[in-house]
Image 1 (tube, rainbow, N blue to C red):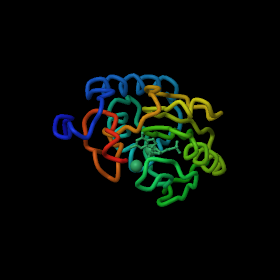
Image 2 (image 1 turned 135 degrees about the vertical axis):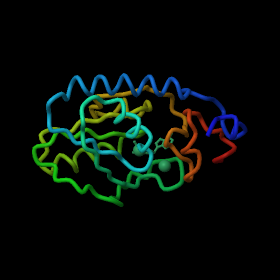
Image 3 (image 1 turned 90 degrees about the vertical axis):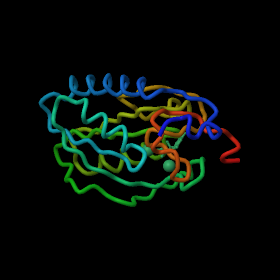
Length: 183
Ligand code: 5GP
Ligand code: MG
Ligand code: MG
């Protein structure tokens, strides 16, 4: 879906379809370089990371298996609750694997820091994080994020997998949501 179809709900397009494609390509190149020849598992965080994962995998030259987790931290609102629940766990044994978590956005960092600790306790060789977007609060925490697409301002964004109450995920760009939609 293109931004023009929900024009009134958006205040600003941050990244176009083309800019996102280019950024994902760059991330894939870095990942290929760093992980060449290793026993990698890409772990996507449902549902927001679906688009990033699908595009990232197609840009990677290496063949890396993927698995998915679903965790809940936000519900349908726009503020982190700080409470993380596993809704769907991995199917894969992590022993000896180089795990790369693939995320759409890191805001408070609460979800990711919890997830990383959780995965690290399962015996992997390493756990790193790749996120397309990162907000200022996350940059302040001590979670080390190896791959970041863009640092963005502290605004609620939708599109390219990111939802508001399950809407706007299929927007082909990333945009800030107009306050009248959620206020
Ligand atoms: P954190 O725990 O880092 O505060 O939040 C992580 C999760 O909250 C993200 O994976 C995402 O699902 C959701 N989230 C955080 N910021 C945004 C945003 O600007 N837009 C949308 N749609 N979801 C967000
Ligand atoms: Mg996410
Ligand atoms: Mg959401």
